[in-house]
Image (cartoon, rainbow, N blue to C red; front, top):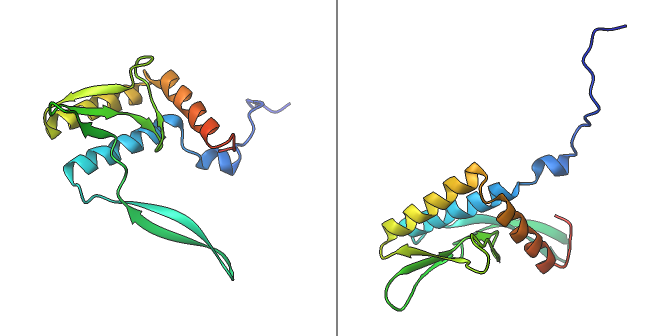
Length: 143
């Protein structure tokens, strides 16, 4: 008999290895928001598929990300962390909005703090709930 260590692990599908994890989706979004705060002209490249008479073709466009932050009436910056572009990650149940402070520097600090919590895995359950909500909003399509 050969002296080999065996396992029942199977090779992952290409679609699974290409797919971003929930953490990566949220971290990308947070990094885009930080760049948007620093540079209001910041854009992100996105792919669109356009149907024409000759078939469908892929087109790359540069668009600014939608801001997750806004100013309240008293000048305080507020932010909602999102999964992708729509589903809100509720840090605490029924409290999706974070009070970030009065300045852009405060807002960046809050976003960096949330990013470190996401990297540490402490928001995984909230991200999973937002991911499920986003999937429902898409009509249950597979990822």
